[in-house]
Image (cartoon, rainbow, N blue to C red; front, side):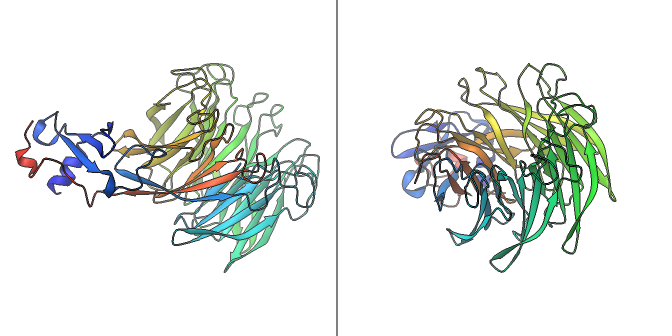
Length: 473
């Protein structure tokens, strides 16, 4: 390890010095000093902007993608997903009116270099008013399969719900299979959440209003693929059903498809609607509850589990509790858990770094493949405008998570709600952010933003120091 790398490992980001130089870190390990600083010329870091104010991690808005067919209230960006390599994204507009009012549509974009282009608009294949096709979306690692939820679709019963799997050949997406609710009952909302594994051969579907055991207790369904045929592998009912738990409101499956995390964000252990999440593991084709994770500091209405994400190897999960009250009412917090064997333990509670009432930090979360970077949405955060929204990027060193970047709304307008949906790619160098309330083209037509994250330490300019061994205070 070089002296520079050694130095950088011991630094902590502390903020700006002045208009020309950015104060990156205070040396607290190498040479055992505490008052020596490293400065970086802004000319060397053109991407250090007001929207990404913390330094070392260069944060560049790669592209703002507006709704391609804007109509008032489309909510383009309400659900988003990015593939492993960060070269394809899927964006939903579940209130899009193609074919019928609120039938819903989704849009796939592909990247060439740093330019994102619309690859295909996928409309609801059998549009009926208020199907909400696109309420949930997920894309596999290679970007050749996507799954789309339509939780109010009516096959079998009113709002029983359905999901749709699409596969790609070249740049053309084709419906591979429509999967209807296997036990349709009115209001089940099968498809309110979806997740697909890396190889695109397993999906998990949430039906948070399904009534097995109690009204609205919730269930989830795991499907596996053979060739182009999807088959129900297992129905997983709420393990301790209570009315309105909404088990299955959010789901996430790991890369190899052998662990899933399921939220029941209105579950009442410890306090009313404190929330819980459940981790399941697979042996062959059988799924078994590995651990129930209750809200570690339950308070009524925290809604722990409003968002969840599991990393590729299935050894870290992140859980959002967007109404948690540390610092301010509804400021929000997130929780990172790590696994040793079959035991999950709280690694760190991450509170809203700048808590304000109603920020809803944790409304969305996403973790990268190796489990060393997470992104957190706070869609009602007020920087620039009321409820303009912001997103926060955290990185892990060992078992410690540190705020790496705050990404504010790049063009803040009231109620844009940047950060309602987030997704980070496998390597953690691209972040997709949904802003379904953004108004370009029409009121609440919606937009999304793709950011490129780069750790740039190759051309640091040190001011006043010739050698780390001879730093003078």
